[in-house]
Image (cartoon, rainbow, N blue to C red; front, side):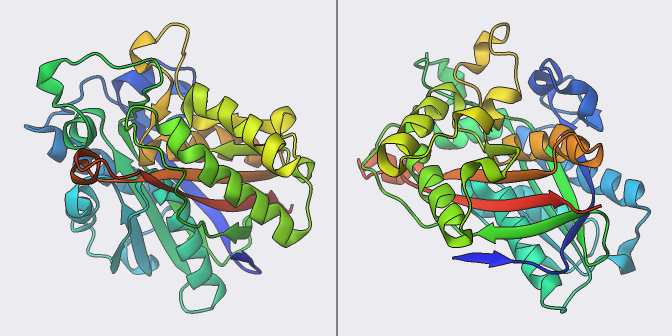
Length: 331
Protein backbone atom coordinates (compact mmCIF):
# COMPACT_ATOMS: atom_id res chain seq x y z
CA UNK A 1 0.00 0.00 0.00
CA UNK A 2 1.75 3.12 -1.27
CA UNK A 3 0.64 6.74 -0.88
CA UNK A 4 1.85 10.03 -2.30
CA UNK A 5 1.59 13.22 -0.24
CA UNK A 6 0.85 16.79 -1.25
CA UNK A 7 1.41 18.80 1.91
CA UNK A 8 3.62 16.92 4.38
CA UNK A 9 7.07 18.33 5.16
CA UNK A 10 9.88 17.97 7.67
CA UNK A 11 10.41 21.07 9.78
CA UNK A 12 13.13 19.90 12.15
CA UNK A 13 14.47 16.94 14.14
CA UNK A 14 16.45 16.23 17.29
CA UNK A 15 18.68 13.36 18.37
CA UNK A 16 20.10 12.37 21.75
CA UNK A 17 22.59 9.50 21.67
CA UNK A 18 24.20 7.23 24.24
CA UNK A 19 27.86 6.48 25.02
CA UNK A 20 28.44 3.82 22.37
CA UNK A 21 26.84 5.94 19.67
CA UNK A 22 28.95 8.91 20.78
CA UNK A 23 32.06 6.84 20.00
CA UNK A 24 30.87 6.27 16.45
CA UNK A 25 31.47 8.34 13.31
CA UNK A 26 28.25 10.38 13.57
CA UNK A 27 28.80 12.03 16.97
CA UNK A 28 29.11 15.56 15.56
CA UNK A 29 25.66 15.29 13.99
CA UNK A 30 23.82 14.48 17.24
CA UNK A 31 22.24 17.30 19.24
CA UNK A 32 23.29 15.76 22.55
CA UNK A 33 25.18 12.73 23.84
CA UNK A 34 25.66 11.28 27.32
CA UNK A 35 28.51 9.14 28.60
CA UNK A 36 26.74 6.72 30.97
CA UNK A 37 23.91 4.32 30.20
CA UNK A 38 22.07 5.41 33.36
CA UNK A 39 22.04 9.05 32.16
CA UNK A 40 21.66 10.22 35.76
CA UNK A 41 18.72 7.90 36.48
CA UNK A 42 18.31 4.94 38.85
CA UNK A 43 17.33 2.38 36.20
CA UNK A 44 17.86 1.71 32.52
CA UNK A 45 14.14 2.02 31.90
CA UNK A 46 13.84 5.52 33.38
CA UNK A 47 17.06 6.45 31.58
CA UNK A 48 15.38 5.58 28.28
CA UNK A 49 12.30 7.61 29.11
CA UNK A 50 14.53 10.55 30.03
CA UNK A 51 16.52 10.45 26.81
CA UNK A 52 13.33 10.39 24.75
CA UNK A 53 11.97 13.30 26.73
CA UNK A 54 15.20 15.21 26.10
CA UNK A 55 14.91 14.71 22.35
CA UNK A 56 11.41 16.19 22.39
CA UNK A 57 12.56 19.15 24.48
CA UNK A 58 15.47 19.85 22.14
CA UNK A 59 13.19 19.58 19.11
CA UNK A 60 10.71 22.08 20.55
CA UNK A 61 13.54 24.50 21.33
CA UNK A 62 15.10 24.16 17.88
CA UNK A 63 11.75 24.70 16.16
CA UNK A 64 10.74 27.42 18.63
CA UNK A 65 7.45 25.67 19.31
CA UNK A 66 5.38 25.44 22.47
CA UNK A 67 2.51 23.27 23.70
CA UNK A 68 -0.27 24.83 21.64
CA UNK A 69 1.73 24.51 18.41
CA UNK A 70 1.72 20.70 18.39
CA UNK A 71 -1.47 18.85 17.47
CA UNK A 72 -0.36 15.35 18.45
CA UNK A 73 2.72 13.33 19.35
CA UNK A 74 3.14 9.82 17.93
CA UNK A 75 5.68 7.67 19.72
CA UNK A 76 6.76 4.09 20.21
CA UNK A 77 9.62 2.01 21.61
CA UNK A 78 10.58 -1.56 22.55
CA UNK A 79 9.61 -1.55 26.20
CA UNK A 80 6.56 -3.49 27.37
CA UNK A 81 3.45 -1.36 26.78
CA UNK A 82 5.69 1.26 25.08
CA UNK A 83 6.58 2.48 28.55
CA UNK A 84 9.28 4.96 27.54
CA UNK A 85 6.97 6.75 25.12
CA UNK A 86 4.19 7.00 27.67
CA UNK A 87 6.34 8.30 30.50
CA UNK A 88 8.24 10.80 28.36
CA UNK A 89 5.18 12.16 26.55
CA UNK A 90 3.29 12.69 29.80
CA UNK A 91 5.66 15.55 30.58
CA UNK A 92 4.35 17.60 27.64
CA UNK A 93 0.59 17.12 27.87
CA UNK A 94 0.23 16.75 24.10
CA UNK A 95 -2.47 14.53 22.59
CA UNK A 96 -0.72 11.18 22.34
CA UNK A 97 -0.81 8.17 20.02
CA UNK A 98 1.32 5.16 21.00
CA UNK A 99 2.53 2.85 18.23
CA UNK A 100 4.63 -0.29 17.87
CA UNK A 101 6.50 -1.72 14.90
CA UNK A 102 9.65 -2.71 16.79
CA UNK A 103 12.65 -1.24 14.97
CA UNK A 104 10.39 0.02 12.15
CA UNK A 105 8.57 2.35 14.55
CA UNK A 106 10.23 5.61 13.46
CA UNK A 107 9.04 5.38 9.87
CA UNK A 108 5.60 4.19 10.95
CA UNK A 109 5.37 7.39 12.99
CA UNK A 110 6.32 9.50 9.96
CA UNK A 111 3.76 7.70 7.81
CA UNK A 112 0.94 8.20 10.30
CA UNK A 113 1.85 11.81 11.02
CA UNK A 114 2.22 12.70 7.33
CA UNK A 115 -1.10 11.07 6.49
CA UNK A 116 -2.86 13.03 9.22
CA UNK A 117 -1.28 16.28 8.03
CA UNK A 118 -1.99 15.60 4.36
CA UNK A 119 -5.65 14.94 5.20
CA UNK A 120 -5.93 18.44 6.61
CA UNK A 121 -6.94 17.24 10.07
CA UNK A 122 -3.79 18.51 11.81
CA UNK A 123 -0.96 20.93 11.06
CA UNK A 124 2.02 19.78 13.14
CA UNK A 125 2.95 16.33 14.44
CA UNK A 126 5.93 15.12 16.45
CA UNK A 127 6.98 11.52 15.74
CA UNK A 128 9.35 10.06 18.33
CA UNK A 129 11.07 6.85 19.24
CA UNK A 130 13.74 5.48 21.56
CA UNK A 131 15.63 2.40 22.61
CA UNK A 132 18.23 1.55 25.24
CA UNK A 133 20.83 -1.15 24.97
CA UNK A 134 20.43 -2.54 28.47
CA UNK A 135 16.66 -2.28 28.87
CA UNK A 136 16.10 -3.91 25.47
CA UNK A 137 18.69 -6.63 25.83
CA UNK A 138 17.33 -7.51 29.27
CA UNK A 139 13.83 -7.81 27.88
CA UNK A 140 14.39 -9.58 24.57
CA UNK A 141 17.51 -11.71 24.87
CA UNK A 142 19.61 -13.40 27.52
CA UNK A 143 19.59 -11.66 30.89
CA UNK A 144 22.49 -9.23 30.67
CA UNK A 145 23.75 -10.32 34.10
CA UNK A 146 24.70 -13.70 32.62
CA UNK A 147 27.30 -12.14 30.35
CA UNK A 148 26.42 -14.74 27.72
CA UNK A 149 28.58 -14.58 24.57
CA UNK A 150 26.83 -13.75 21.31
CA UNK A 151 27.55 -14.83 17.74
CA UNK A 152 29.01 -12.40 15.22
CA UNK A 153 25.61 -12.15 13.50
CA UNK A 154 24.06 -10.46 16.55
CA UNK A 155 23.29 -6.76 16.43
CA UNK A 156 23.68 -4.20 19.21
CA UNK A 157 20.64 -2.28 20.44
CA UNK A 158 21.30 1.44 20.08
CA UNK A 159 20.73 3.83 22.97
CA UNK A 160 19.08 7.17 22.39
CA UNK A 161 15.98 9.19 21.70
CA UNK A 162 14.98 10.83 18.42
CA UNK A 163 12.11 13.10 17.46
CA UNK A 164 11.01 14.71 14.20
CA UNK A 165 8.57 17.55 13.59
CA UNK A 166 6.24 17.19 10.60
CA UNK A 167 4.30 20.15 9.25
CA UNK A 168 1.96 21.28 6.47
CA UNK A 169 4.20 24.27 5.74
CA UNK A 170 6.63 23.96 2.84
CA UNK A 171 10.09 23.69 4.39
CA UNK A 172 11.82 22.46 1.24
CA UNK A 173 12.06 18.86 2.44
CA UNK A 174 8.92 16.96 1.50
CA UNK A 175 7.59 13.64 2.70
CA UNK A 176 6.92 12.60 -0.87
CA UNK A 177 5.45 9.11 -0.50
CA UNK A 178 5.27 6.09 1.75
CA UNK A 179 4.76 2.35 1.58
CA UNK A 180 3.19 0.50 4.49
CA UNK A 181 4.88 -2.82 5.13
CA UNK A 182 3.38 -6.30 5.27
CA UNK A 183 4.20 -8.87 7.93
CA UNK A 184 6.67 -11.33 6.47
CA UNK A 185 7.54 -14.83 7.71
CA UNK A 186 10.63 -16.47 6.22
CA UNK A 187 10.74 -19.13 8.95
CA UNK A 188 13.61 -17.53 10.84
CA UNK A 189 13.91 -18.42 14.53
CA UNK A 190 17.23 -16.95 15.69
CA UNK A 191 16.86 -13.73 17.75
CA UNK A 192 20.62 -13.27 17.44
CA UNK A 193 20.47 -12.92 13.66
CA UNK A 194 18.07 -10.06 13.08
CA UNK A 195 19.56 -9.33 9.67
CA UNK A 196 18.32 -12.64 8.33
CA UNK A 197 14.94 -12.10 9.96
CA UNK A 198 14.29 -8.62 8.58
CA UNK A 199 16.00 -8.57 5.17
CA UNK A 200 13.08 -10.29 3.37
CA UNK A 201 10.64 -7.72 4.74
CA UNK A 202 12.91 -4.90 3.57
CA UNK A 203 13.12 -6.48 0.12
CA UNK A 204 9.34 -6.87 -0.10
CA UNK A 205 8.69 -3.24 0.85
CA UNK A 206 11.38 -1.78 -1.41
CA UNK A 207 10.13 -3.83 -4.37
CA UNK A 208 6.50 -2.88 -3.80
CA UNK A 209 7.40 0.78 -3.34
CA UNK A 210 9.30 0.91 -6.62
CA UNK A 211 6.67 -1.11 -8.48
CA UNK A 212 3.72 0.90 -7.17
CA UNK A 213 5.34 4.17 -8.25
CA UNK A 214 6.91 2.87 -11.48
CA UNK A 215 10.43 3.73 -10.36
CA UNK A 216 13.83 2.15 -10.68
CA UNK A 217 16.10 1.90 -7.66
CA UNK A 218 18.40 4.57 -9.13
CA UNK A 219 15.56 7.10 -8.80
CA UNK A 220 16.91 7.61 -5.28
CA UNK A 221 20.27 9.07 -4.42
CA UNK A 222 20.25 6.80 -1.40
CA UNK A 223 18.21 3.85 -0.12
CA UNK A 224 18.64 3.24 3.61
CA UNK A 225 17.44 0.27 5.60
CA UNK A 226 16.94 0.53 9.34
CA UNK A 227 19.13 -1.95 11.13
CA UNK A 228 20.00 -5.05 9.17
CA UNK A 229 23.66 -4.86 10.14
CA UNK A 230 26.55 -6.13 8.07
CA UNK A 231 25.14 -9.60 7.40
CA UNK A 232 21.58 -8.47 6.81
CA UNK A 233 22.83 -5.80 4.43
CA UNK A 234 24.52 -8.40 2.24
CA UNK A 235 21.50 -10.69 2.45
CA UNK A 236 19.26 -7.88 1.22
CA UNK A 237 21.52 -7.04 -1.73
CA UNK A 238 21.57 -10.70 -2.78
CA UNK A 239 17.82 -11.11 -2.16
CA UNK A 240 16.94 -8.11 -4.35
CA UNK A 241 19.07 -9.48 -7.20
CA UNK A 242 17.80 -13.05 -6.93
CA UNK A 243 14.10 -12.41 -6.32
CA UNK A 244 13.49 -9.16 -8.21
CA UNK A 245 16.44 -8.69 -10.56
CA UNK A 246 17.31 -5.38 -8.92
CA UNK A 247 20.84 -4.26 -8.10
CA UNK A 248 20.67 -1.74 -5.25
CA UNK A 249 24.33 -2.03 -4.24
CA UNK A 250 25.34 1.27 -5.86
CA UNK A 251 23.08 3.55 -3.81
CA UNK A 252 22.25 1.48 -0.73
CA UNK A 253 23.43 1.50 2.87
CA UNK A 254 22.20 0.40 6.29
CA UNK A 255 21.83 2.63 9.35
CA UNK A 256 23.00 -0.15 11.65
CA UNK A 257 26.29 -0.20 9.77
CA UNK A 258 26.62 3.59 9.62
CA UNK A 259 25.98 4.28 13.31
CA UNK A 260 29.17 2.69 14.64
CA UNK A 261 32.81 2.25 13.73
CA UNK A 262 32.60 -1.50 13.17
CA UNK A 263 36.37 -1.88 12.89
CA UNK A 264 37.06 -0.32 16.28
CA UNK A 265 33.83 -0.95 18.21
CA UNK A 266 33.94 -4.74 18.28
CA UNK A 267 31.31 -4.87 21.04
CA UNK A 268 28.59 -3.88 18.56
CA UNK A 269 29.24 -7.06 16.56
CA UNK A 270 27.22 -6.88 13.29
CA UNK A 271 26.09 -3.28 13.88
CA UNK A 272 23.21 -1.36 15.39
CA UNK A 273 19.57 -2.25 15.95
CA UNK A 274 16.62 -0.93 17.95
CA UNK A 275 13.95 1.64 17.00
CA UNK A 276 16.29 4.58 17.56
CA UNK A 277 19.07 3.13 15.39
CA UNK A 278 17.66 4.30 12.05
CA UNK A 279 16.18 7.45 13.61
CA UNK A 280 19.57 8.57 15.00
CA UNK A 281 21.08 8.26 11.53
CA UNK A 282 18.15 9.61 9.50
CA UNK A 283 17.35 12.56 11.77
CA UNK A 284 20.98 13.67 12.00
CA UNK A 285 23.39 13.09 9.12
CA UNK A 286 20.78 12.22 6.47
CA UNK A 287 18.61 15.23 7.26
CA UNK A 288 21.76 17.37 7.24
CA UNK A 289 22.63 16.07 3.78
CA UNK A 290 19.14 16.89 2.53
CA UNK A 291 19.30 20.40 3.95
CA UNK A 292 22.66 20.98 2.24
CA UNK A 293 21.47 19.46 -1.06
CA UNK A 294 24.14 16.77 -0.91
CA UNK A 295 21.34 14.33 -1.66
CA UNK A 296 17.88 15.21 -2.97
CA UNK A 297 15.93 11.95 -2.90
CA UNK A 298 16.21 9.31 -0.18
CA UNK A 299 14.15 6.24 0.62
CA UNK A 300 14.11 5.37 4.32
CA UNK A 301 13.17 1.76 4.99
CA UNK A 302 12.93 1.01 8.70
CA UNK A 303 12.91 -2.70 9.50
CA UNK A 304 11.42 -4.42 12.54
CA UNK A 305 11.34 -7.92 14.06
CA UNK A 306 7.93 -8.57 15.56
CA UNK A 307 8.62 -11.06 18.32
CA UNK A 308 8.52 -11.53 22.05
CA UNK A 309 10.68 -13.75 24.27
CA UNK A 310 7.64 -15.93 24.93
CA UNK A 311 7.19 -16.76 21.24
CA UNK A 312 10.92 -17.44 20.83
CA UNK A 313 10.90 -19.80 23.81
CA UNK A 314 7.96 -21.59 22.21
CA UNK A 315 10.05 -22.00 19.03
CA UNK A 316 7.74 -19.95 16.87
CA UNK A 317 9.04 -18.18 13.78
CA UNK A 318 10.11 -14.54 14.14
CA UNK A 319 7.96 -12.29 11.98
CA UNK A 320 9.24 -9.07 10.42
CA UNK A 321 8.02 -5.88 8.79
CA UNK A 322 9.47 -2.89 6.96
CA UNK A 323 7.90 0.52 6.37
CA UNK A 324 9.25 2.96 3.78
CA UNK A 325 9.06 6.72 3.37
CA UNK A 326 10.47 8.83 0.56
CA UNK A 327 11.95 12.25 1.35
CA UNK A 328 12.69 14.75 -1.41
CA UNK A 329 14.26 18.21 -1.58
CA UNK A 330 11.89 20.45 -3.53
CA UNK A 331 13.63 23.82 -3.16
